[in-house]
Amino acid sequence: MRKSLSLLPISLALALAACGGGANDTAEGGASSSGTVKAVEAPAGQKWSETVSKTDAGGIVMGNPDAPIKLVEYMSITCSHCKDFGEQAFAPLRDNYVESGKVSFEVRNFVRDPLDLTAAILSRCGGEGPFFPLTEQALSNQGTMFEKAQSMGEATYSDILKSAPETRFVRLAEQLGLIAFFQQRGISEDQAKTCLADTAAAESLMNGTQKAAEEFNIEGTPTFLLNGQKIEGTNWAVVETKLKEAGAR
Image (cartoon, rainbow, N blue to C red; front, side, top):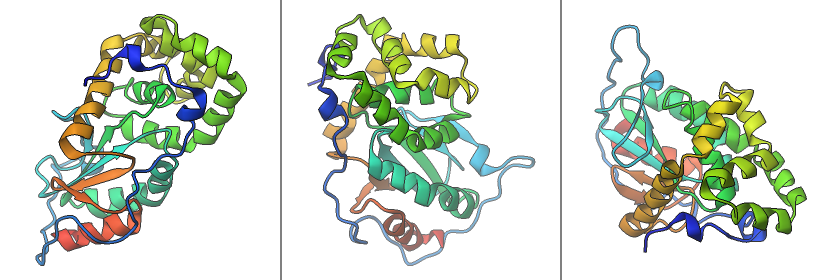
């Protein structure tokens, strides 16, 4: 069943609930290879970490578009495990693997709740270029966002979610301090409000989440695919082991 904006009302307690799909942090599962993939130089004057584009699946991918090793993360900005992975992995993944041209890294938003959806819309508001740094910083802002959400109270939260779809996420972002947060990072207030009022963008993110759940049986975040196969684990040590086994060492 396709998600729609009418299904978004959810209690604040549930929106702040823990994430995770029950995956164990083991090094089992996923593709492996005994060979080593050769590095691929980026075009002159470019860096693979600065080569960013939108994918047909609705994600944003960084790196060599023809990289033989393709890592996908289904992530939620309101997920503490996703925050932990970002802190552990973003720099080494970018510097040691994506920059080599061997690995591309794609993030697909798996929206869990209205708070997550609001932040996801804003992380995409500047286009593909700033998506990764904005997402990384939004994950780091989790604690502040949750504090503001809790201080909002259930009554205010419920009232916001009953408002018209084109104003709902603007109001929620204002309560969460997200418009000011993203404004400090290059997204103007007018730009942010325009993005948040775009109901088609919200529907697209929710439809992508529903499709992922059905196609890949994604049950929680973060979930990783390596060349189309799930990795059973949620931390950087597990993912890096699988990248090396696939030939990225």
